Image: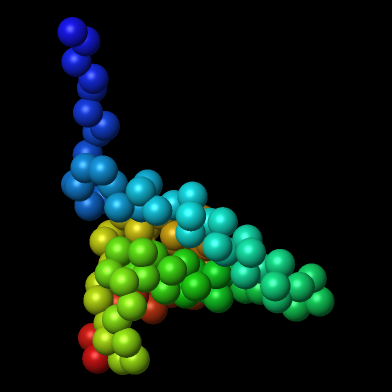
Length: 100
């Protein structure tokens, strides 16, 4: 009987399977649908796409949290979303997680 190799641990969150990889396709699909709904007449900044991704990932991971309830996302999600939608300005810093 052949034994399957287990997927490598995530380089950021050290979880198996990686949280980002688990939900990535669904989140990116949701972002594409959202962009189509906004329409071509409005340009969407990467900062808006990042915030939308964070919200969608949070819903997939934690379910609905309610108004004002914040939960820090795994570092793999944050790092990969930042890579996918980087700041437009080189000197601009990322906001990061803020407690209530």
